[in-house]
Length: 468
Ligand SMILES: [Zn+2]
Image (cartoon, rainbow, N blue to C red; front, side):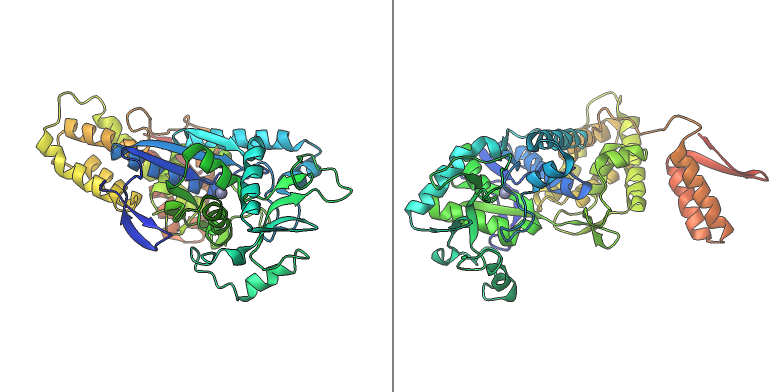
Protein backbone atom coordinates (compact mmCIF):
# COMPACT_ATOMS: atom_id res chain seq x y z
CA UNK A 1 0.00 0.00 0.00
CA UNK A 2 1.15 3.53 -0.70
CA UNK A 3 0.50 6.18 1.94
CA UNK A 4 -1.32 8.37 -0.57
CA UNK A 5 -4.98 9.05 0.14
CA UNK A 6 -7.18 10.51 -2.62
CA UNK A 7 -10.77 11.67 -2.73
CA UNK A 8 -12.53 9.36 -5.15
CA UNK A 9 -15.61 10.83 -6.85
CA UNK A 10 -16.80 7.29 -7.66
CA UNK A 11 -17.19 6.34 -4.01
CA UNK A 12 -17.50 9.87 -2.58
CA UNK A 13 -14.84 9.00 0.01
CA UNK A 14 -11.13 9.40 0.61
CA UNK A 15 -9.37 6.12 -0.14
CA UNK A 16 -5.86 4.81 0.14
CA UNK A 17 -4.32 4.54 -3.31
CA UNK A 18 -2.81 1.30 -4.55
CA UNK A 19 -1.99 0.76 -8.24
CA UNK A 20 -3.60 -2.21 -9.97
CA UNK A 21 -0.24 -3.21 -11.42
CA UNK A 22 2.43 -3.17 -8.68
CA UNK A 23 4.85 -0.26 -9.00
CA UNK A 24 3.03 1.34 -11.96
CA UNK A 25 0.26 3.94 -11.88
CA UNK A 26 -1.81 4.51 -15.02
CA UNK A 27 -3.50 7.90 -15.29
CA UNK A 28 -5.76 9.45 -17.92
CA UNK A 29 -6.64 13.16 -18.00
CA UNK A 30 -9.31 14.76 -20.15
CA UNK A 31 -7.50 17.36 -22.18
CA UNK A 32 -8.51 20.53 -23.99
CA UNK A 33 -10.88 21.11 -26.89
CA UNK A 34 -8.52 23.08 -29.07
CA UNK A 35 -10.87 25.52 -30.82
CA UNK A 36 -9.93 28.57 -28.71
CA UNK A 37 -7.16 29.65 -26.34
CA UNK A 38 -6.95 27.70 -23.10
CA UNK A 39 -7.62 30.22 -20.34
CA UNK A 40 -6.45 30.30 -16.73
CA UNK A 41 -9.51 28.40 -15.56
CA UNK A 42 -8.75 25.57 -17.98
CA UNK A 43 -5.19 25.28 -16.69
CA UNK A 44 -6.36 24.26 -13.24
CA UNK A 45 -7.27 20.75 -14.42
CA UNK A 46 -3.76 20.13 -15.74
CA UNK A 47 -2.08 21.61 -12.68
CA UNK A 48 -4.12 19.21 -10.55
CA UNK A 49 -3.11 16.26 -12.74
CA UNK A 50 0.49 17.43 -12.42
CA UNK A 51 0.28 17.39 -8.61
CA UNK A 52 -1.18 13.89 -8.75
CA UNK A 53 1.62 12.77 -11.03
CA UNK A 54 4.28 14.20 -8.69
CA UNK A 55 2.62 12.66 -5.62
CA UNK A 56 2.50 9.23 -7.28
CA UNK A 57 6.16 9.49 -8.23
CA UNK A 58 7.01 10.49 -4.66
CA UNK A 59 5.48 7.15 -3.62
CA UNK A 60 8.06 5.45 -5.82
CA UNK A 61 5.64 4.60 -8.63
CA UNK A 62 6.32 4.76 -12.33
CA UNK A 63 3.52 6.81 -13.89
CA UNK A 64 2.07 6.48 -17.38
CA UNK A 65 0.09 9.65 -17.98
CA UNK A 66 -2.14 9.96 -21.04
CA UNK A 67 -3.83 13.23 -22.03
CA UNK A 68 -6.18 13.58 -24.97
CA UNK A 69 -6.59 16.51 -27.31
CA UNK A 70 -10.12 16.99 -28.63
CA UNK A 71 -9.89 18.25 -32.18
CA UNK A 72 -13.21 16.99 -33.51
CA UNK A 73 -16.71 16.10 -32.36
CA UNK A 74 -17.14 18.38 -29.34
CA UNK A 75 -20.43 20.09 -30.01
CA UNK A 76 -21.54 23.43 -28.68
CA UNK A 77 -24.24 21.72 -26.60
CA UNK A 78 -23.91 18.68 -24.34
CA UNK A 79 -27.20 17.43 -25.78
CA UNK A 80 -25.54 16.39 -29.06
CA UNK A 81 -26.88 19.41 -30.87
CA UNK A 82 -25.34 22.56 -32.19
CA UNK A 83 -22.22 22.93 -34.24
CA UNK A 84 -18.90 21.23 -33.80
CA UNK A 85 -16.72 23.73 -31.92
CA UNK A 86 -13.79 23.23 -34.29
CA UNK A 87 -15.87 23.53 -37.46
CA UNK A 88 -17.52 26.66 -36.10
CA UNK A 89 -14.19 28.29 -35.27
CA UNK A 90 -12.91 27.38 -38.73
CA UNK A 91 -15.93 28.87 -40.48
CA UNK A 92 -15.69 32.05 -38.42
CA UNK A 93 -11.99 32.60 -39.10
CA UNK A 94 -11.66 31.31 -42.64
CA UNK A 95 -8.90 28.97 -41.54
CA UNK A 96 -8.85 25.20 -41.57
CA UNK A 97 -9.92 23.21 -38.52
CA UNK A 98 -6.52 21.56 -38.33
CA UNK A 99 -4.70 24.91 -38.44
CA UNK A 100 -6.82 26.13 -35.55
CA UNK A 101 -6.30 22.91 -33.61
CA UNK A 102 -2.53 23.10 -34.12
CA UNK A 103 -2.34 26.70 -33.00
CA UNK A 104 -4.25 26.19 -29.75
CA UNK A 105 -2.59 22.86 -29.02
CA UNK A 106 0.76 24.63 -29.26
CA UNK A 107 -0.44 27.48 -27.02
CA UNK A 108 -1.70 24.99 -24.44
CA UNK A 109 1.49 22.91 -24.47
CA UNK A 110 3.60 26.07 -24.12
CA UNK A 111 1.51 27.29 -21.17
CA UNK A 112 1.81 23.89 -19.47
CA UNK A 113 5.60 24.10 -19.79
CA UNK A 114 5.61 27.62 -18.39
CA UNK A 115 3.76 26.53 -15.26
CA UNK A 116 6.05 23.50 -14.91
CA UNK A 117 3.56 20.74 -15.65
CA UNK A 118 5.57 17.63 -16.37
CA UNK A 119 5.27 16.28 -19.92
CA UNK A 120 2.65 13.56 -20.23
CA UNK A 121 3.75 10.16 -21.50
CA UNK A 122 1.27 10.34 -24.39
CA UNK A 123 -0.70 13.22 -25.90
CA UNK A 124 -3.30 11.74 -28.23
CA UNK A 125 -5.56 13.49 -30.72
CA UNK A 126 -9.10 12.39 -31.44
CA UNK A 127 -8.63 12.82 -35.21
CA UNK A 128 -5.71 10.38 -35.15
CA UNK A 129 -7.80 7.67 -33.48
CA UNK A 130 -10.90 7.47 -35.66
CA UNK A 131 -10.42 3.73 -36.32
CA UNK A 132 -10.25 2.95 -32.60
CA UNK A 133 -13.41 4.97 -31.99
CA UNK A 134 -15.29 3.20 -34.78
CA UNK A 135 -14.16 -0.16 -33.41
CA UNK A 136 -15.48 0.71 -29.96
CA UNK A 137 -18.83 1.86 -31.36
CA UNK A 138 -19.06 -1.38 -33.38
CA UNK A 139 -18.50 -3.44 -30.26
CA UNK A 140 -21.30 -1.57 -28.53
CA UNK A 141 -23.52 -2.07 -31.56
CA UNK A 142 -22.78 -5.81 -31.65
CA UNK A 143 -23.73 -6.06 -27.99
CA UNK A 144 -27.04 -4.32 -28.59
CA UNK A 145 -26.41 -1.05 -26.79
CA UNK A 146 -27.02 1.24 -29.76
CA UNK A 147 -29.76 2.43 -32.08
CA UNK A 148 -29.76 4.37 -35.29
CA UNK A 149 -31.71 7.54 -36.02
CA UNK A 150 -31.48 10.08 -38.84
CA UNK A 151 -28.86 12.01 -37.01
CA UNK A 152 -26.47 9.22 -36.07
CA UNK A 153 -25.76 6.16 -33.95
CA UNK A 154 -26.81 6.59 -30.32
CA UNK A 155 -26.05 4.81 -27.07
CA UNK A 156 -29.21 3.59 -25.32
CA UNK A 157 -28.61 4.53 -21.70
CA UNK A 158 -31.63 2.49 -20.51
CA UNK A 159 -29.65 -0.66 -21.33
CA UNK A 160 -26.95 0.23 -18.79
CA UNK A 161 -28.61 -0.04 -15.35
CA UNK A 162 -25.72 1.69 -13.55
CA UNK A 163 -25.96 4.77 -15.79
CA UNK A 164 -27.15 7.15 -13.06
CA UNK A 165 -24.87 5.73 -10.37
CA UNK A 166 -21.60 7.61 -10.89
CA UNK A 167 -23.02 11.13 -10.92
CA UNK A 168 -26.04 10.34 -8.69
CA UNK A 169 -28.25 11.50 -11.55
CA UNK A 170 -31.97 11.96 -11.33
CA UNK A 171 -32.90 10.66 -14.77
CA UNK A 172 -36.56 11.46 -14.27
CA UNK A 173 -35.62 15.05 -13.57
CA UNK A 174 -36.58 17.96 -15.77
CA UNK A 175 -33.18 18.55 -17.26
CA UNK A 176 -32.79 15.00 -18.56
CA UNK A 177 -36.30 15.13 -19.96
CA UNK A 178 -35.68 18.43 -21.67
CA UNK A 179 -32.72 17.07 -23.59
CA UNK A 180 -34.79 14.41 -25.35
CA UNK A 181 -36.52 16.78 -27.70
CA UNK A 182 -33.28 18.30 -28.92
CA UNK A 183 -32.58 15.43 -31.31
CA UNK A 184 -35.65 13.94 -33.03
CA UNK A 185 -35.83 10.19 -32.49
CA UNK A 186 -33.70 10.09 -29.38
CA UNK A 187 -35.24 7.59 -26.97
CA UNK A 188 -34.12 8.96 -23.62
CA UNK A 189 -32.85 12.35 -22.55
CA UNK A 190 -29.47 11.00 -21.50
CA UNK A 191 -28.80 8.96 -24.68
CA UNK A 192 -25.75 10.25 -26.49
CA UNK A 193 -24.19 10.08 -29.93
CA UNK A 194 -21.43 7.61 -30.70
CA UNK A 195 -21.31 8.57 -34.36
CA UNK A 196 -22.91 11.58 -35.99
CA UNK A 197 -23.73 11.71 -39.67
CA UNK A 198 -22.45 14.66 -41.63
CA UNK A 199 -25.54 16.88 -42.09
CA UNK A 200 -27.05 16.52 -45.57
CA UNK A 201 -25.77 19.12 -47.98
CA UNK A 202 -23.03 20.24 -45.62
CA UNK A 203 -19.42 19.51 -46.43
CA UNK A 204 -17.59 19.31 -43.16
CA UNK A 205 -13.83 19.78 -43.08
CA UNK A 206 -13.52 16.82 -40.75
CA UNK A 207 -15.50 13.75 -41.72
CA UNK A 208 -14.71 10.09 -42.23
CA UNK A 209 -16.23 6.94 -43.70
CA UNK A 210 -17.68 4.50 -41.23
CA UNK A 211 -19.81 1.31 -41.33
CA UNK A 212 -22.86 3.57 -40.83
CA UNK A 213 -22.01 6.29 -43.33
CA UNK A 214 -19.89 9.39 -43.54
CA UNK A 215 -19.62 11.46 -40.39
CA UNK A 216 -17.63 12.04 -37.24
CA UNK A 217 -17.37 10.52 -33.77
CA UNK A 218 -19.35 11.73 -30.76
CA UNK A 219 -17.17 13.58 -28.28
CA UNK A 220 -17.26 11.05 -25.42
CA UNK A 221 -16.05 8.15 -27.53
CA UNK A 222 -12.45 9.33 -27.89
CA UNK A 223 -11.64 9.18 -24.18
CA UNK A 224 -12.88 5.59 -23.84
CA UNK A 225 -11.10 4.47 -27.01
CA UNK A 226 -7.76 6.21 -26.40
CA UNK A 227 -7.45 5.43 -22.68
CA UNK A 228 -8.03 1.74 -23.44
CA UNK A 229 -5.47 1.83 -26.23
CA UNK A 230 -2.69 3.42 -24.17
CA UNK A 231 -3.47 2.28 -20.63
CA UNK A 232 -5.44 -0.95 -20.99
CA UNK A 233 -8.42 -1.60 -18.73
CA UNK A 234 -9.11 -1.28 -15.92
CA UNK A 235 -6.71 1.54 -15.04
CA UNK A 236 -5.96 3.53 -11.91
CA UNK A 237 -6.97 7.20 -12.11
CA UNK A 238 -9.05 9.38 -14.43
CA UNK A 239 -8.94 13.14 -13.89
CA UNK A 240 -10.93 16.09 -15.19
CA UNK A 241 -12.95 19.15 -14.29
CA UNK A 242 -15.94 18.75 -12.01
CA UNK A 243 -18.17 19.86 -14.90
CA UNK A 244 -17.48 16.52 -16.61
CA UNK A 245 -19.02 14.33 -13.90
CA UNK A 246 -22.66 14.38 -14.97
CA UNK A 247 -22.33 13.97 -18.73
CA UNK A 248 -18.90 13.34 -20.20
CA UNK A 249 -17.49 11.03 -17.56
CA UNK A 250 -20.83 9.31 -17.00
CA UNK A 251 -20.93 8.57 -20.74
CA UNK A 252 -17.31 7.42 -20.84
CA UNK A 253 -18.12 4.94 -18.07
CA UNK A 254 -21.25 3.68 -19.84
CA UNK A 255 -19.38 3.04 -23.11
CA UNK A 256 -16.33 1.48 -21.51
CA UNK A 257 -18.06 -0.74 -18.98
CA UNK A 258 -20.51 -2.06 -21.59
CA UNK A 259 -17.90 -2.61 -24.29
CA UNK A 260 -15.29 -4.14 -22.02
CA UNK A 261 -17.59 -5.99 -19.57
CA UNK A 262 -15.77 -4.42 -16.70
CA UNK A 263 -16.70 -2.70 -13.43
CA UNK A 264 -15.31 -0.48 -12.18
CA UNK A 265 -13.60 0.56 -15.40
CA UNK A 266 -11.49 3.11 -13.50
CA UNK A 267 -10.60 2.80 -9.82
CA UNK A 268 -10.19 6.47 -8.88
CA UNK A 269 -11.86 9.55 -10.35
CA UNK A 270 -10.40 12.92 -9.38
CA UNK A 271 -12.20 16.15 -10.21
CA UNK A 272 -11.01 19.69 -9.80
CA UNK A 273 -13.31 22.58 -8.91
CA UNK A 274 -13.44 25.83 -10.86
CA UNK A 275 -11.88 29.17 -10.36
CA UNK A 276 -14.44 31.84 -9.97
CA UNK A 277 -13.59 35.22 -11.32
CA UNK A 278 -14.91 37.88 -9.03
CA UNK A 279 -18.07 35.83 -8.47
CA UNK A 280 -18.48 34.87 -12.12
CA UNK A 281 -17.41 31.85 -14.08
CA UNK A 282 -14.73 32.74 -16.59
CA UNK A 283 -16.27 32.35 -20.00
CA UNK A 284 -15.96 33.53 -23.52
CA UNK A 285 -19.44 35.02 -23.48
CA UNK A 286 -18.72 37.11 -20.38
CA UNK A 287 -15.59 38.48 -22.03
CA UNK A 288 -13.53 37.86 -18.90
CA UNK A 289 -11.21 35.27 -20.41
CA UNK A 290 -7.64 35.62 -19.26
CA UNK A 291 -4.87 33.47 -20.65
CA UNK A 292 -1.44 32.98 -19.13
CA UNK A 293 0.07 35.41 -21.63
CA UNK A 294 -2.18 38.17 -20.25
CA UNK A 295 -0.57 37.69 -16.84
CA UNK A 296 2.90 37.74 -18.39
CA UNK A 297 1.98 40.99 -20.16
CA UNK A 298 1.06 42.43 -16.78
CA UNK A 299 4.51 41.62 -15.44
CA UNK A 300 3.74 38.34 -13.68
CA UNK A 301 6.05 35.37 -13.62
CA UNK A 302 4.10 32.34 -14.99
CA UNK A 303 5.20 30.41 -11.92
CA UNK A 304 3.42 32.97 -9.77
CA UNK A 305 0.26 31.53 -11.31
CA UNK A 306 1.37 28.05 -10.27
CA UNK A 307 1.90 29.51 -6.79
CA UNK A 308 -1.64 30.92 -6.91
CA UNK A 309 -2.92 27.46 -7.85
CA UNK A 310 -1.02 25.86 -4.94
CA UNK A 311 -2.70 28.25 -2.51
CA UNK A 312 -6.06 26.53 -2.97
CA UNK A 313 -7.06 22.90 -2.60
CA UNK A 314 -8.06 21.50 -6.00
CA UNK A 315 -11.48 20.40 -4.69
CA UNK A 316 -12.35 23.89 -3.52
CA UNK A 317 -13.45 26.82 -5.59
CA UNK A 318 -10.83 29.52 -5.57
CA UNK A 319 -11.43 33.15 -6.42
CA UNK A 320 -9.20 34.59 -9.05
CA UNK A 321 -8.74 38.33 -9.15
CA UNK A 322 -5.74 40.39 -10.18
CA UNK A 323 -5.44 41.42 -6.54
CA UNK A 324 -5.24 37.78 -5.45
CA UNK A 325 -2.70 37.26 -8.21
CA UNK A 326 -0.59 40.17 -6.87
CA UNK A 327 -0.70 38.59 -3.42
CA UNK A 328 0.36 35.24 -4.90
CA UNK A 329 3.21 36.91 -6.76
CA UNK A 330 4.38 38.48 -3.50
CA UNK A 331 4.25 35.13 -1.71
CA UNK A 332 6.07 33.49 -4.60
CA UNK A 333 8.82 36.11 -4.50
CA UNK A 334 9.21 35.65 -0.75
CA UNK A 335 9.62 31.91 -1.05
CA UNK A 336 12.09 32.33 -3.91
CA UNK A 337 14.06 34.88 -1.90
CA UNK A 338 14.23 32.50 1.06
CA UNK A 339 15.37 29.69 -1.22
CA UNK A 340 17.95 31.96 -2.86
CA UNK A 341 19.36 32.86 0.53
CA UNK A 342 20.25 29.22 1.34
CA UNK A 343 21.02 28.07 -2.20
CA UNK A 344 24.76 27.98 -1.78
CA UNK A 345 24.70 26.80 1.83
CA UNK A 346 27.66 24.47 2.42
CA UNK A 347 27.57 21.18 4.26
CA UNK A 348 25.04 18.43 4.71
CA UNK A 349 21.85 18.62 6.74
CA UNK A 350 21.63 16.36 9.76
CA UNK A 351 18.98 13.67 9.03
CA UNK A 352 17.20 14.09 12.36
CA UNK A 353 17.06 17.85 11.82
CA UNK A 354 14.99 17.51 8.67
CA UNK A 355 12.96 14.36 9.40
CA UNK A 356 10.09 16.02 11.22
CA UNK A 357 9.59 18.69 8.53
CA UNK A 358 9.82 16.16 5.75
CA UNK A 359 7.18 14.10 7.50
CA UNK A 360 4.80 17.03 7.84
CA UNK A 361 5.22 17.94 4.19
CA UNK A 362 4.61 14.35 3.07
CA UNK A 363 1.52 14.15 5.23
CA UNK A 364 0.08 17.19 3.50
CA UNK A 365 0.78 15.77 0.03
CA UNK A 366 -0.61 12.38 1.00
CA UNK A 367 -3.80 13.90 2.34
CA UNK A 368 -5.55 14.27 -1.02
CA UNK A 369 -2.80 16.47 -2.49
CA UNK A 370 -3.21 19.23 0.07
CA UNK A 371 -1.08 21.83 -1.65
CA UNK A 372 -1.96 24.81 0.59
CA UNK A 373 -0.81 22.87 3.64
CA UNK A 374 2.34 21.70 1.87
CA UNK A 375 3.05 25.29 0.89
CA UNK A 376 2.60 26.41 4.51
CA UNK A 377 5.16 23.83 5.65
CA UNK A 378 7.57 25.11 2.99
CA UNK A 379 7.16 28.67 4.31
CA UNK A 380 7.72 27.55 7.90
CA UNK A 381 10.92 25.84 6.87
CA UNK A 382 12.03 28.81 4.77
CA UNK A 383 11.58 31.16 7.73
CA UNK A 384 12.70 28.83 10.52
CA UNK A 385 15.39 30.30 12.72
CA UNK A 386 15.98 26.89 14.33
CA UNK A 387 16.99 25.14 11.15
CA UNK A 388 20.50 25.45 9.78
CA UNK A 389 20.99 26.78 6.26
CA UNK A 390 21.96 23.38 4.87
CA UNK A 391 18.79 21.85 6.33
CA UNK A 392 16.62 24.56 4.84
CA UNK A 393 18.30 24.13 1.46
CA UNK A 394 17.84 20.35 1.51
CA UNK A 395 14.20 20.53 2.55
CA UNK A 396 13.18 23.23 0.09
CA UNK A 397 14.74 21.31 -2.79
CA UNK A 398 12.95 18.17 -1.71
CA UNK A 399 9.60 19.97 -1.36
CA UNK A 400 10.02 21.47 -4.79
CA UNK A 401 9.66 18.06 -6.41
CA UNK A 402 5.99 18.43 -5.51
CA UNK A 403 5.60 22.22 -5.60
CA UNK A 404 7.34 22.63 -8.97
CA UNK A 405 8.39 26.23 -8.37
CA UNK A 406 12.02 25.88 -9.53
CA UNK A 407 13.28 26.73 -6.03
CA UNK A 408 16.76 25.53 -6.98
CA UNK A 409 17.22 27.91 -9.88
CA UNK A 410 14.55 30.59 -10.22
CA UNK A 411 15.20 34.16 -9.20
CA UNK A 412 12.62 36.40 -7.59
CA UNK A 413 11.30 38.60 -10.36
CA UNK A 414 12.54 42.16 -10.26
CA UNK A 415 11.44 44.29 -13.16
CA UNK A 416 14.05 46.52 -14.74
CA UNK A 417 14.41 49.62 -12.60
CA UNK A 418 12.51 52.72 -13.60
CA UNK A 419 9.87 53.07 -16.27
CA UNK A 420 7.95 49.98 -15.14
CA UNK A 421 4.36 50.61 -16.26
CA UNK A 422 2.87 48.09 -13.84
CA UNK A 423 4.53 49.71 -10.84
CA UNK A 424 3.75 53.19 -12.12
CA UNK A 425 0.12 52.12 -12.30
CA UNK A 426 0.13 50.70 -8.79
CA UNK A 427 1.75 53.85 -7.41
CA UNK A 428 -0.89 55.93 -9.18
CA UNK A 429 -3.59 53.67 -7.76
CA UNK A 430 -2.19 54.20 -4.25
CA UNK A 431 -2.14 57.94 -4.79
CA UNK A 432 -5.77 57.86 -5.87
CA UNK A 433 -6.66 55.85 -2.76
CA UNK A 434 -4.91 58.44 -0.56
CA UNK A 435 -6.77 61.25 -2.26
CA UNK A 436 -10.09 59.58 -1.50
CA UNK A 437 -8.81 59.03 2.06
CA UNK A 438 -8.97 55.24 1.71
CA UNK A 439 -5.81 54.75 3.73
CA UNK A 440 -6.33 51.01 4.17
CA UNK A 441 -6.22 50.53 0.42
CA UNK A 442 -3.26 52.89 0.08
CA UNK A 443 -1.34 50.97 2.72
CA UNK A 444 -2.21 47.67 1.11
CA UNK A 445 -0.68 48.79 -2.18
CA UNK A 446 2.35 50.24 -0.37
CA UNK A 447 2.87 46.89 1.42
CA UNK A 448 2.45 45.00 -1.83
CA UNK A 449 5.18 47.13 -3.40
CA UNK A 450 7.36 46.87 -0.30
CA UNK A 451 7.15 43.10 -0.76
CA UNK A 452 8.81 43.62 -4.12
CA UNK A 453 11.49 45.80 -2.56
CA UNK A 454 9.97 49.03 -3.81
CA UNK A 455 9.85 52.11 -1.62
CA UNK A 456 7.51 55.02 -2.25
CA UNK A 457 8.49 58.50 -1.32
CA UNK A 458 5.83 61.19 -1.12
CA UNK A 459 7.20 64.46 -2.40
CA UNK A 460 5.48 67.82 -2.93
CA UNK A 461 5.60 67.03 -6.66
CA UNK A 462 3.83 63.72 -6.11
CA UNK A 463 4.90 60.19 -5.26
CA UNK A 464 8.18 58.74 -6.51
CA UNK A 465 9.34 55.16 -6.27
CA UNK A 466 12.69 53.45 -6.18
CA UNK A 467 14.05 50.01 -5.62
CA UNK A 468 16.12 48.87 -2.69
ZN1 LIG B 1 -12.63 12.90 -21.62
